[in-house]
Image (cartoon, rainbow, N blue to C red; front, side, top):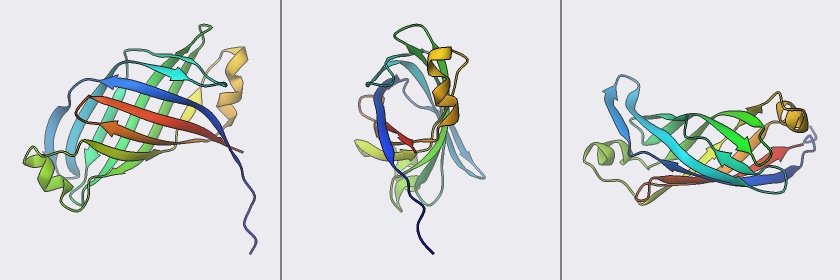
Length: 154
């Protein structure tokens, strides 16, 4: 069977500042850890603006060291549009990540892979409603920040 063609286009990069983790604690499905967005910036040719100080990541760290993300943020573009962004994704702290987290040992960074969806009513940006995005990112635990390069699949 032939592979279906696709392309990806760079949309922009965003950097978000985060609160220190709010640790709900070990639950049956894993350790629940919440990070809240305190601000940030989106820059690129297709999207630029700021991240509002709302939203966050309701992360679950599984016993195998895999972190599952559940993120919601709002981008306010340079020209005043509001874009709601929701995505899921994964990060990997390694096989000992769960135990290390419980012991208070975190690496400096963790790579992230996500699949954002964006939604807006603003006429200049309705194209985002029709696109599946993916992003490659990294959380910096020491500086309470995250950075993503965002791409559109076509």
